[in-house]
View 1 (cartoon, rainbow, N blue to C red):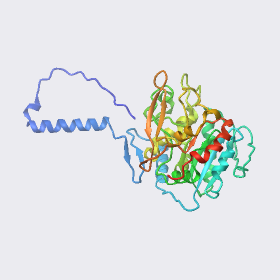
View 2: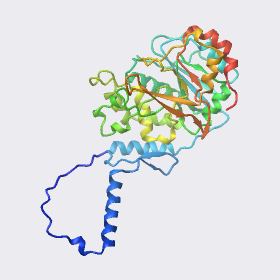
View 3: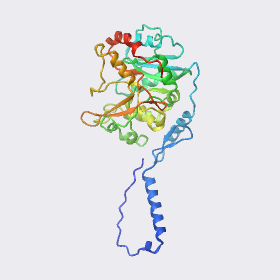
View 4: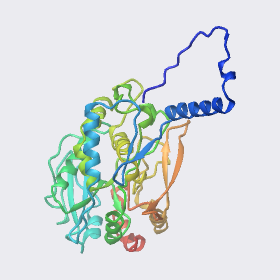
Amino acid sequence: MVEAQKKNYHQGPRHHHTSLKKPLWLVLTVSVFSMLLICTHMMPPRHRKSSSSSWLPVHVRKLSDEEVAARTVVRDILKTPPFLTSSSKIAFLFLTPGTLPFEKLWDKFFTGHEGKFSIYIHPSNERPVHISSHFSDREIYSDEVTWGRISVVDAEKRLLVSALEDPDNQHFVLLSESCIPLHTFDYTYRYLLYANVSFIESFVDPGPHGTGRHMEHMLPEIAREDFRKGAQWFTMKRQHAVIVMADSLYYSKFREYCGPGIEAYKDCIADEHYLPTFFSMIDPMGISNWSVTYVDWSERRWHPKTYTANEISLHFMKNVTTEEMSIHGTSVGEHGDELHWPCTWNGITRPCYLFARKFHPDALDTLLNLFPNYTSTVV
C-alpha cells in the first residue's frame, strides 16, 4: 500500500475570511463531504466481493502486469465449481524421510474404502519399506528436502501436481510420517469433501517469528500487513491445489527471500508462511484459518511435543478428537501468546481435528488397540 505523504506548508496570517460570507449550511456540507473523502482515502475497505463467491483484496497501489495476470488466473479458477461424483476421492500426500511408522494404523483406516482415496508418498532420504498393499509403489519423484527451506514447499508441490493428474481427486491432505488418523474414514471423507473451505491455517503473529520474518525485498507484492503464519499441514480443495500450481509470482518471493540466514535475525520458514500468506491475500474467505491436524506446542520449543506410548490413553485421545477450539501460538512476549479460534464446519461448530502429530513409533500398538474406541463415524 502506498503510504500517505505528509506535507508541511508555511501558512502566513490570514487576511480574508471568505467562509463567513457563505451560508452556514453550505460550509458545513462541504466540510463533512471533505472529511468523508479523506477518511475513505486513508482507510480503504480491506476486501471486496468479486463476481464469484470468493473475495479478493483491494490494493490502493497500482498492480504490476504480473500481479494483474496472476489475479486474473486466480479469479477464473475460483469460478470453477467443485465437481463431486460417486467416484470423487481424497488424495493423501505423505511427506516423509522414509518408512512410515504408522502404516499399519493407516491401513486399518483405509481398508474397506478402496476407490475413495489415493495415496502419494514423497520420501526424501530413503525408499520406504511397506507392509500394506495400499502404500506399495506409491512413491513419486523426490528431491532433497531441508527443514526451513523452500525445498519443503517444492516437495509439497510435487505431491500436489502428481495427485492432480487424477481428475477424481477432489481434496488433498498433506501428512507427515508422525501423523495418525483421529476418526473413521467415512467421517473424514464427508468432513473434507463436503466442506465449503480448504483447511489452511492462517493468522497474524505480530512477534519476531511471525510478522518479524517479513523481508522488505518481498515488496511491493507482499506487504508486511499481508504476511501470515500457519501450520504447513493443510487440506485443500481441488481448485485451491490448481491455484498453488499456477502461482509463480508470490512463490518466487518466498523462494528468493524466505529462508534461514537470508537476512540477519530473520529466520523465515517458507512452509510456515507461503501458503498462509498466499491464500490470505487471494481467497481469505475460502480457507478455514485453522488446521485439521492437531499438534501440541505447549513446550514452546522449535519442534512440537512428541507423544510416546506411555502418554497415550483413551481419555487423552477422546479429548483431542472432540476439541472444538483451535489454538494459534504466537511469538509475542517471552513465552509466547495464544490465539483461540472456534472450529466451524459449514457454519456449524464441529470438532477441529481429523489427524494428529507428533507420535513416537513406539505408540503404534497402543494406537491400534485404542483406534476403534476413539474414532467418530458421524459428522
